[in-house]
Length: 226
Image (cartoon, rainbow, N blue to C red):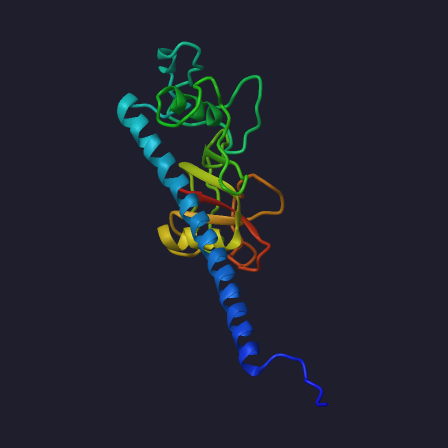
């Protein structure tokens, strides 16, 4: 009696390897599609808020949050109307809300973004990071933030829109798609985070803050003008 040897043929092994390859390719492609969707979502945040801001500016000739005529809505808290938005992008809730949080209330009352006008809550991005606005460094005398170190020294001293907790690949792609792909120049600038929703730096380190796609780094990305 001959013993029948059990096992897989070369053809069967080849078929299994092909199936495994297709599955891995599908998984990797799916992951890449998720990343691309997140990039588009983050860019849409910048674009949508910019459209809302300019719509409000055109309609009321005032900056949301700073608008002293916001009393047109019952229950709204007006700003002081000095043309400067006070408060930082990551300002916490307080008894007296800074204008950087009233910004969201005024936009909601006007119907430019969703939500109840009484709410000063800041929206979150797709990475649970805070989205917010501020003017320069929010000092008594406004100074620049996210400035370059080497001459010519340039920074953002006007109204900026920031979005925090953005993963490395997404941050680099945002800059590449709507600006110059460099973290410390142009209208889009970014800083490496060491904690969630950090304060905006006065100056950017040309080496330490640059985009590094290591799968771990997170960035706060800011844009000016809005």
